[in-house]
Amino acid sequence: MQKELADEKLILAKIANGDQLAFGILFNFYRNKVYGYALAILQEDAAAEEIVQDVFIKLWVKRTHLVQIENFGGFLRTTARNETLNALKKATVEQRNILKAH
Image (cartoon, rainbow, N blue to C red; front, side, top):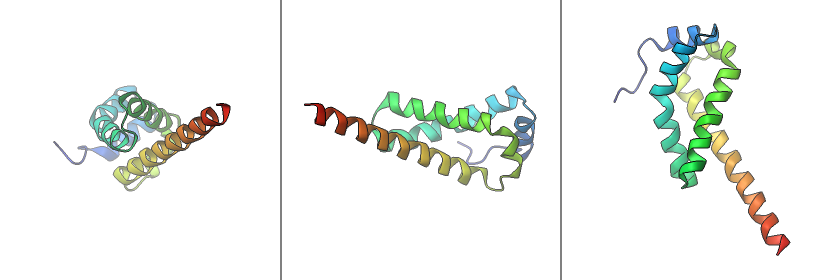
């Protein structure tokens, strides 16, 4: 498997201009990496899938800023890590609330 997406800067520029096909290329290239990271931490398939969705929705919403990113792989790892940690925090709070209710 390729480590880096060919013509990544060009693809990011296209996405910044709203190109959905370019976004699909980015998504298909990186989704398994994000999923694998989230699954390793969360140990739950559905939660890892949700992280993938959250990460790529965030990328699309902030797409105009993608051209400014020098290290997209690092940016994506950081975004995936933050979304995963937020999911862990949310699950912990929910678990505490359940325990308090009983």
